[in-house]
Length: 184
View 1 (cartoon, one colour):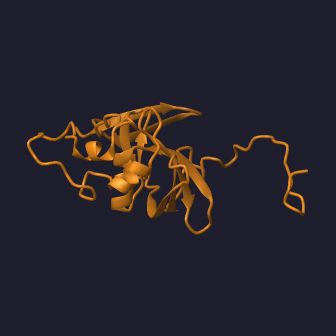
View 2: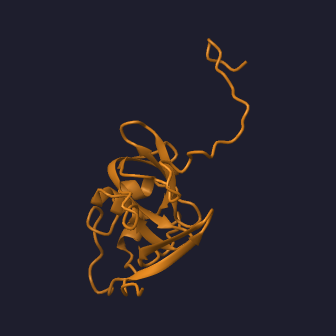
View 3: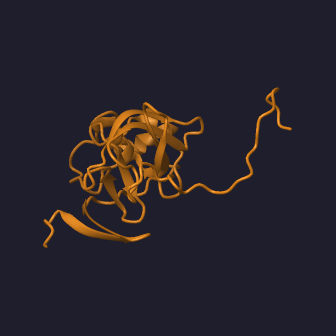
């Protein structure tokens, strides 16, 4: 079977084999933390013809400056995104976002991640049908993690489980708070 020209066949081997079609999307250029958001917002993208004026914050293709400034990205320009079911608070999965993935998530109503292994964007549910409908996005107090509350359709995990944590608990020594709330 030949895939359409805008799709690539992806094979992942982890606890079995998964075959799926992923849309090909260009990898983002890393954005170092040292570059001010005003410079990031005005820098031409690799896909642009460079002759046009830079987009202002809030326009298509640019993360609002106040959000971009608050983010603390890792060395690859990514931020961890914790995905949680909005009505039950069930933690579903962890994904990674750069500025463009976050902008798409905030403006389309669907969650978009950046795949570190495939070096491309992927919108959750495009191939599996297990869509994540965005309800809210919050930034943690340090700016290094996002909480994305969603309405999950179907399994959140690529293995077919409801969450990426189902059946994967580790053995721990369980602690308990004292009545006064202090550690014993």
